[in-house]
Image (cartoon, rainbow, N blue to C red; front, side):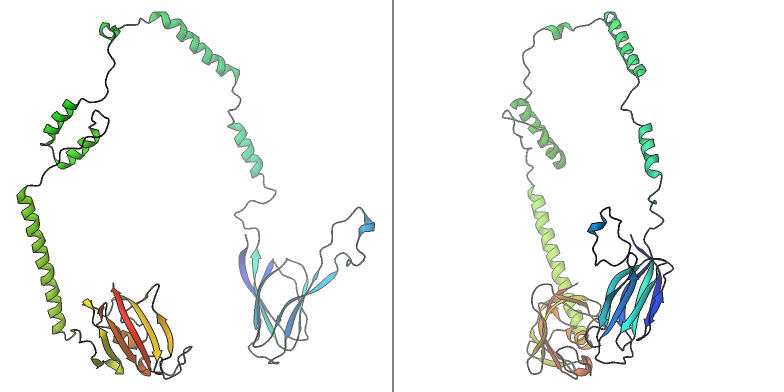
Length: 384
């Protein structure tokens, strides 16, 4: 596990070698061109020179490669190449070991910034390689190993068994005369007559007690006997019907009150086809009026939409899959949506025309030119 300890950085300039000897293990993470470029199109290459590790000594000296560099010789490699407008930064993970000498140089005209971290490759929470913890744990396991039991314990166990065998004669076996008689084999199944008696008693039991009783009862064929069903009295049925009617009336009364409240606030839904102009010049036209409560500020709404420019070109849409969800009036979307979606009902479909001042203004957004009037065909799926 590698742990970053402190940041490190250096600026490489063309024509100047930088010799570094890290105070600790160093990991170079990124190389990037300077913000001021001397050459706007030329490539700049970062080179790294280091001492090669000495190879393992071989018994057969004749097999050594003649082209192999001498032990501990300097090796130069390319870390990265950067070009303005194409590749201006490069991510890497090059580890430079502590107290070794390294040379960094540039081939090109642009300065390069290197960034990285001093790292710890052996955190303190892990035992070192030469720790005695392994041997100590083995000794503890041997101390609790009961695989070999001493012969003294086995002899004691045998002695107890012998004492019990000697006492057998002191116990007298008492037999019940009734048990000594040969009894006919018992039928473990409950007779049908008993079931009938229990069913009669079940009429006096509560509903939960009859369910428990049904699990315990078994007939002659071994199958469960259902508990006697309780018929609902006619009075209970009439009470249930009366409650249903009462709940229905309450629901209708509540919906009517909500509708009246909406009319008082002047937010009753318009007829489909009417075009209205709202705050900031946002225009809306309801193609289909929904049902239920109306969306208001603070509601979380699920939407389907198609976004068009005035020439009919579609720049964005959500017509299937996961719907687009946002909180109305919180600034999650353009202001034209916060104004144009308010007042819609579930299932409603609306055309919302957003002027530039209520959309993206003078900004160019992907396929949307600056100062564009946006037309959205939206449908409200759900209000949360």
